[in-house]
Every structure is written in C-alpha cells, then in structure tokens.
Amino acid sequence: TIVNVYERPDGIRIATVFILAIVVTSFVSRAARTTELRVEKIEFDERAKEFLNDINKEEIRLVTNRREIGDVEEYRFNEHEKRLDNHIPSSDPILFFEVELGDASDFKGKLKVRGIEVEGYRIMRTQSPAVPNAIAALLLHLRDKTGKIPHVYFGWSEGKPLNYLIRYVLFGEGDTAPVTREILRKAEPIPERRPHVHVGG
Image 1 (cartoon, one colour):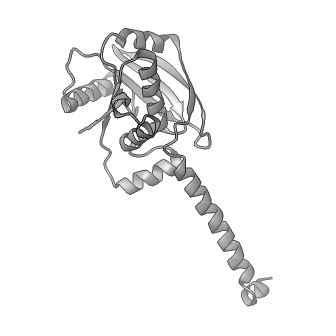
Image 2 (cartoon, rainbow, N blue to C red; image 1 turned 45 degrees about the vertical axis):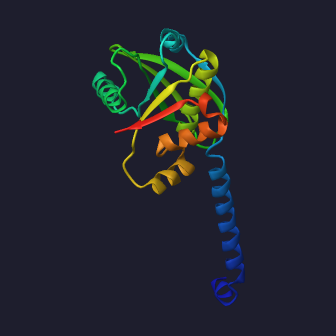
Image 3 (tube, rainbow, N blue to C red; image 1 turned 60 degrees about the horizontal axis):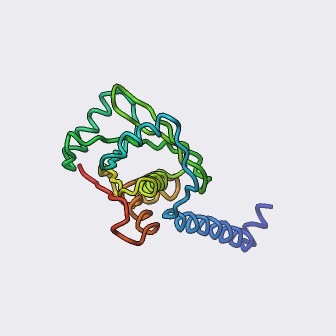
C-alpha cells in the first residue's frame, strides 16, 4: 500500500537504482558501438553500378545530402556549394549519397544502394540505422573495389557538438562528418589508405 511505501521506502530506492543501472549500462553499451563498422555487405542495383562504373576512371567524389524535397534545385545548390567550399573542379564528376535513417535497433546488416537520376544529377540512396556507419562502409567498399582512395564531402552542422553526439548515440544521426572520420580511423589504421573526409561551409 501507499502507507507501506511511505514508511518503508527501501524497496523504491532499490528499484530506482536498478532501473538507473539498466539505463546507464544500455547507454554506455550503445555509445561503445557508435564507431563500429556495422555493415557486413553492400548490394548495388543496376543503376548504381552504372554510376560507379562511369566514375571509376576519375577521382571518386561523393557528396552527402540529407534529402529535403529531392528536386533539381536542391542538388544544383548542394553541388555548387560543395564545389565552391572544397575547390572541386567543375570538370570532375560527383555522386550524391543519401542515407535514410532506418531501424535504430539494428546494429549490423546489409546496405542496399539504389541509383537514381534527377535531371542529370546522379544520386545513390540507401537506408541504415546509423548514417555515418553507412557512409564509412561505402567509402571503404569503393576503395577496396577500385583501388582508389575516395573523397567524401560534408557541410558543417549548426548547433552544439554535445547535442549531436547524444542524438547520434540515441538515434543514429547527428553531426555526421566527425563520426564518419572516426569510424574510418578505427577501421583503417594506415592514414594513406584511409578515405578522405572534407568538411566545408
């Protein structure tokens, strides 16, 4: 009864400590997995394979994009911004890469990458429970398949870094660039073999 709980609060205290311990353990466990390379396999549809074959002769340059409308204006603006901020020659082809957030409870799995074209802009799209892990996995896959060190381009996120870190641990998204770089650093200890991460804006 309520009276017993009030007179003997030890049970409530023990239960509270137990619940807090479970929450903290879960958070620490999830935080420890944030820089793991969780992708085991990557599959490309025919259009995505076509895009990759076309850029295989050039420097591999991926531009990340968090899709809003997905119209030509969005890609035109993003391309202009990334080329300007990172001094990418206008003659160098780029590929957009978009990761839609999937089930955050899945820590390992397979990436299915689709190729889409929007008025001449080539986009590869996939779904993953953790955005930086998907980007890092694709970069390493491209390096291993082509023998070239790929480049990836991000924009800075506005806001406090700690808030983005918490969002990433809890939901798999946040300030993607530094987490992607850390995953790559852990996955590839040799700097010369590590994909290049560029952040501008």
